[in-house]
Every structure is written in C-alpha cells, then in structure tokens.
Length: 498
Image (cartoon, rainbow, N blue to C red; front, side, top):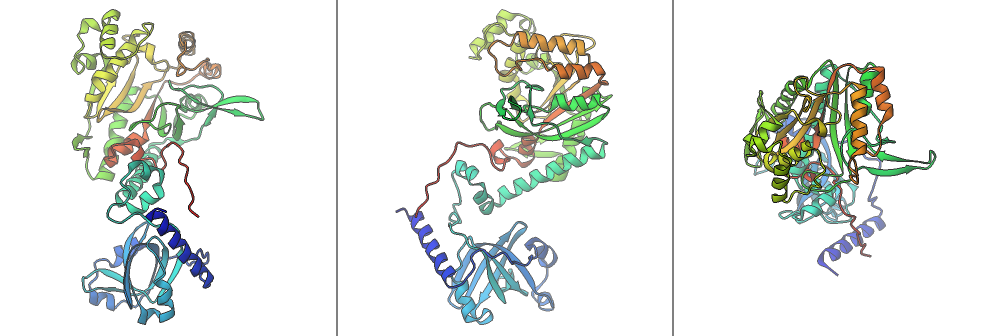
C-alpha cells in the first residue's frame, strides 16, 4: 500500500472512531459565520490594546490549512473564500474534553471557531477560541503544503483541490467573475438587452466549425449544440430589438490546445444602425475600461510582454498585413499558383480547390497572426471567407469586417451585417455546393433565417468576443485551461482504497 493510501486509511479510521464517540462528522445545524475577509478589513490594522478594548466575540468557519499542536495549546489557520485567519486553541480555555476532541482534527477539516480577537507575540491577528466545533470532516489529505499539486493536468482534473491550495488560482477565477460582471454592466449601461437563445439547434450555423450532434427522442430529430448564437440574435433585430447581447456557451467538436476548449464562453452583441467601424471604437473603450478596473492600468503585462490597451489601436487590412508583416509580395497575392507553392512550402494542407481568400487567411494564420502582439484590428476580409458579412461598398471582393488580435491570438470577430436576403441566400447556397467533405461547413441552408431577412433586418453590426481569451489576457494566464474552472479532460478512473 502506498504512503498516500496509508494516510487515507488512517484518516478514515480516525473519522470512524470520532463518529463512534458521538461526534457528528457532517452536521447541518451550523450558524452562519462571519467572513474572514470582513474581520480582516475591519480589524486588521488594530493594535493589541485596541483589540483588548473590543467587547465583541467573533465566529468564523473555514478549512484548516495549517495546524501546530504543542501539548496544551495549538495554533491553526482557517481559510474561507475571503481570506485566512489564525486561531489559538488552549486546553485551559476550551476545557480538557473539548481540547481532546480538537486534537483529533486534521488539516483539511472545516471547523468553526468562536472567541475574541487578540495579537500574538509575533503580532499576528488571531482569534482566541472559546469554542471550536467540527463543520465537515475531510476524509482525504490535502497536498503537502510547500509542493502542492505540481502536475498541471492533475490540477485541472481536481480543480477543487487546486482552489483550496493556490491563492493565485482563486484570484484568477474571482477576476474572471469580475470581468463577466463588467461586460454585462457595460452593455446594459449602453442600452443593450440581455437575451437567451437556443443551445440546441436544428441547423448548424453562425460560424464555421464542426458541431456536436445529439438526438431528441420525442421529436425524433437530430439536434446540434450551437457553435454560435449569431443567426438567432439577428432574428431578434428583425423582431425589433435593436441592441441585444448574450453571454453564451458555445460548443465546437475540435481539438484541444492552450487556446481551445470544446466548450467555451463567448459574448455576442448586435447593434442596429451601427457599422463595424463603430464596433472598433466600442471594443477599444470596453477593453480599456476592463483593464483599468481589474489591473489598475490600460498598460498590462502578459507573459512578460507589455501590452498597451489605451485607444486608439492599430488598424490594417488583411492584404496590408500579409505584405507588411507576412512579407508576401503584392504581385503574389492574386497569383493562385504562387500562393499554393508558398502554402506547400510551409506544409499547410490545401486541396487546390479553395477560394483565393482561403489562401490569404491560411497564410495570415501562419505568417502574421503570431506577430500581432499589440492590439491590432485586421479589416477587409475577402467575401469568399466571410459568408455573413456585408460587402464593402467600394470593393465587393472584400467585406466590412474586422478581427481583433492581441498577444498573437484572435480575441474578437465583427462585421457589418449582411441584410440583403438575396445575397445571403446565394452565399449560403454556394457555401453548401462547394462544401465537399468539409464537415466544418454547414450542410444545409438555414431558410428560416433567409425568411427572417426577407421580413427585413435594419442595417446593423455584430461582434463576438472570446471571453476565455479575454480573461487569459487580463489574468496573465498562458492557457485557456487556467481560466476555465473545469476544462475538458480525458476521463480519469479513480480506484478506491478499502
């Protein structure tokens, strides 16, 4: 039996002995405690003599994170969601019988302590326990204090332990919650209405990605977990809601990497009588305000690189970026054979049947995107790779679209919306006709969406923001798994030791 298994066995034996002695290991009649954070905030700066004058008892509950026993006295540190506070437990104060029970407690147990505040000889704010009780018995030990969980995959699998042991991880997810709150607050303050659209959809649409398929027994139909809410949100523009947003979960049956998780969070918003240029300004304003709130400045550091989020941000067309950043000569950009050779030399797979715009975006991904460290809007994507975007009035071969790149990765995608049902139907039909074996392209036309456009959608612009990537940026996290509480993992089979 391993050392860890022996520790678990001993702990469970001790728990059984406590239970046989009449101690409830999992009581439910626990009075609500004060938060440790509120005590630290109100009394953390008080001197010893000031604490002595307080005629107040405090009750806290938290997980035992440190425990030192010295015969007749003990010290432990309790941690709740707001902070950590030391508790002093003495046999003379607690009583011999109660102190004997306390000495059976382990690191990892959740306990409640009640008593006055004082400062120790080392000047640490501490509760002098007049009463201690068990709240929840921990049947498994926490990782060793100084090493914690060093295996990142194990941390992602056992996030509950990761959160207990690592303050930085807890802070990341508290910051994530704050960022989502700021996103919601911004759009509501700007007059947008928050809405909810279907997560199970009969037709794949709104983006190019391989979907997850499921089956509805009662209706006897296949449904798809949404890859984007776009087409439903634009139906709401048709219905008369002129400014809508949704914080939504999307699902794409694709690879897993430091930038991709099959289930992820997006914010999509649509605004009637706006253009993609309006959304660039809105995005600059939004990101800068979030950085100022959560990082205290519009200049932040990401993985050792200084990122300046203060508006205005750089803007380049896709064509300009290929020439200026990617080093592709202008005369090659419309030379199919030259582009195919360049892609082949870079080991980028192609069939030879793709539209020219597809070659541009593949080269962009390879040559340009990794080099866009500072916030950069890339605009005017080819029409043949932008099936939902409005054609540019001056050059119908490109669209009024942008993608935002920061730290070498895409953060957002937006465009002026195509609201001509005739053009949209033709593009859908062409997309389906040229689909071939590409299961990332929708296999059928969403005729109900075309019908909605025929009712009439006002001119509008819409945008999707990758919330997980935004949180990565704001929390200086290198992997998307660091900002998703429970990232998708291969199943783990846990073997129980008897």
